[in-house]
Image 1 (tube, rainbow, N blue to C red):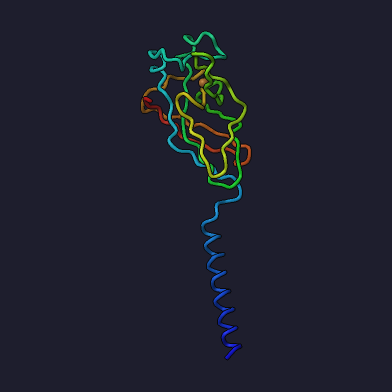
Image 2 (image 1 turned 180 degrees about the vertical axis):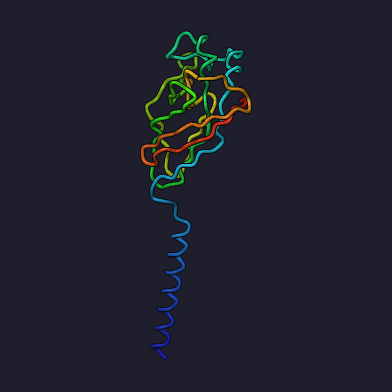
Length: 172
Ligand SMILES: [Cu+2]
């Protein structure tokens, strides 16, 4: 009788541990970074022509007027489902001569844009690229961008490698 109790106790313990293990395996996030990009969009170039918002002031280029027709800003949400951080280190597209990762910084009453070398995406977190904050700057556009157009942007992450993103042109 005693041995039977002991055995059934052991079986119950093994079954319980098994269930916990299976649950852990199915709910655990990957240990490597896992990047997802959502809602990638760009401003149409003609909108940048007519808008005289502070966004157009550019720390790298004092003659913002002349670049307005050939540059635009791209916004998106970059999510990292993994348990380790990753970094966006490079951006490129066939549509532009130059692509940079920018941040918007306040200097006095002015909002200015600055290129940054990398953008960290925290584990199980997200970074929002949005007007007034981080964005991807496309300079030297090979054609004007109108609402409804789209372009392919390649994001290069330190650990996850290249991620291709379809960017839709729309009004903010
Ligand atoms: Cu910018």
